[in-house]
Image 1 (cartoon, rainbow, N blue to C red):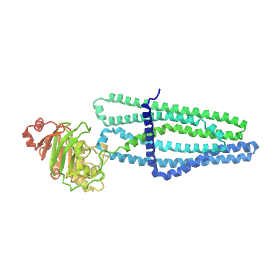
Image 2 (tube, rainbow, N blue to C red; image 1 turned 45 degrees about the vertical axis):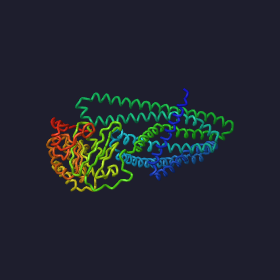
Image 3 (cartoon, rainbow, N blue to C red; image 1 turned 60 degrees about the vertical axis):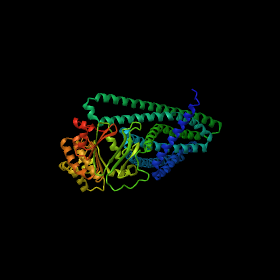
Image 4 (cartoon, helix red, strand yellow; image 1 turned 135 degrees about the vertical axis):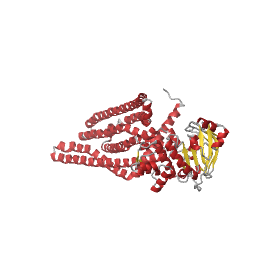
Length: 601
């Protein structure tokens, strides 16, 4: 099919883009390996020695055929045989050294890359985690790093070793008889064309295979995390069918990849046999015609050609692994160049003295730019005031909380803390001033004390204990077998929801002892007794700081200094509990029904 004028520039652009992408990926690998250049330098020296030793045996065979064998000199054969054995021993030692050094450098580089990638993920904003499946992130840190491990620890070792070996053999062959060398290497241009032909196909198939694996990882993570729901509602059969679909897609992607690889490797074997046949026929005629000096030379060239094709075949075998590794490097590279939307300002200002005054000015915000969740919100919260926020599901309550902690930035307007736009503060400074207790409290694997201090070395045991006492968590902690040293399972699986909520409150108080306290539906999923404990704690805490309380139960906010009611992203009512009841509007209707206000969006 003819290429149209419109198609040609597009194809050229695609080629340029692929070339630039490969350069970026190789640059990533280079940056990862650069700190370990000393190990790489020693490995290269060992590589050169190995290549020299690999080219020497055919030369010894040539000497044996044209010398001792012709003269029937047994002593000469013993000398050349001993030299051959010594060459093999030297090659064994050099190969061990080069493999060990390259593996060592590769593993060190990968350890650095894992830390770098995880550190980069820690800097990402909440929007990034909201739109990126957890399974995809896990795949980047596990299977993609494993693919890079295979690339750096196996493929790179093979590629460097065989490339240097091939180069040395070609140089030796050209130096001894350039006509035979050209005859032996005649198939290499064809090999290069075939490699280029299969290159894009294998890369594309490899990318499809890794994406299919990432989808399986994401599905498994979701299903295992929600296994209770799956079993409660009898979705085992449906989940099995869905997994079978993902597994079938992965199987098909693997079949396509393996088919391309098999065709590629088979073509290499055919070309290798063809090259040796050409050399045997042409070299034999060269001996008869006299432009090949001896039979020993022809035999040596056949051995060199075999040794030259062995690196080519090994390089071809590694091509699939290289493409998989480069595909993994591409995904890791994309992750590393994804900058968080929420970052520290270029020139942050020093935080002012902590008072806790909040001023929200004409804020419009939406998770999607064209779908605002908050619409022109203006709200002033004086220092020390307790503000309760109520409203139906989707009213924008939790979105308002997300703006206060700067988990998101508004599309319009500004949020000020103590008179300073929070976008001008370092995130670390802001997060010490605004402590959020989420609706679904998170606990990490470790001890009770570690979950409260979150590994902050500057918090003493007394600080942890005071925060727990203030949050009314001390009572249940003391009843545990080892108190504050008791182990917490991942996710807090060995704690009740109420206990996790008390720990989350203690954590907020410990890490931000003087900051703004934000409670996002903190009592929506707990029993009455635990709610009473939290309410008792809050009565002490809220007297000393600015607090924003998203309410699930209206009974928990009767004594708030001020209550605002949100509806469709706007503040529709603002006042005290009694004043809003007397007004007879939204709040009065919610109070009348005594139902949950909603979980917020």
